[in-house]
Length: 323
Image (cartoon, rainbow, N blue to C red; front, side, top):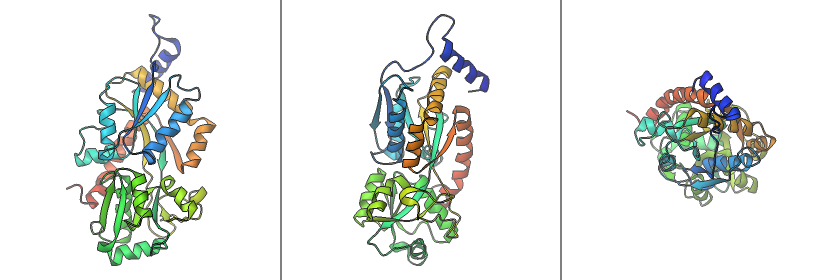
């Protein structure tokens, strides 16, 4: 949407059309469709939105519906069965770009309607506290010396942000990213369960997915992919950069709608999400979930997604997922 069209749409929301018809706004329940199981980054983002938007920003009730499968593509496809309907939105991440690059989903951000980018979510490289790996250097040495024996588990699809962070570590350290035994789970909660049961040796997921178990002492976070240390349960965890490995990656979480949404519908959601991110309630959600605010509206998000798509091509090539 151009700046002129956005201003016009926002004006329409405030004044209505010349014929007296109200500008676009939800008239019934809003469905936030989450393309992953409960407990992961997609789900946490949706439920945080639900809590804050219902505090006077969106007048209609909001439901969160989990439809896991194909790294989020199942949820996006379900949402897109309602073209032009602003009552259906979904959470998006780098998966929408990596799926496009790999050709595993016909849906792209250009065929849907990106509404906003909300946060970046930096990643924790975690191990079972009772396992043999006690430090980040232990993990690095194991991956260099016996990569074929290592078992790596993550959610939700090959080539996603967790997998990309692993590729970055492989490039920084110099081990063969293809050799560890890799298990892909449907959701972060399943990956955490596997790590708790020592069915995998290490896992990568957003810091919030592991925080509860780091606090309880069941899991250890060896390093984070953030540019600086995180707070809370992760306050004592070093960054990969301070350990000498240039691994900095925080997958984005955004909001996307179905195809054929109209300018006034886009403007409604852009304005609502802008208001949401300015509330104290949202800022608390950001802190509690170890997020970093990176808000972008519709136009900025389109530009960001195009540039991010180009950056991800190299990582997917390193993972052997692109020719």
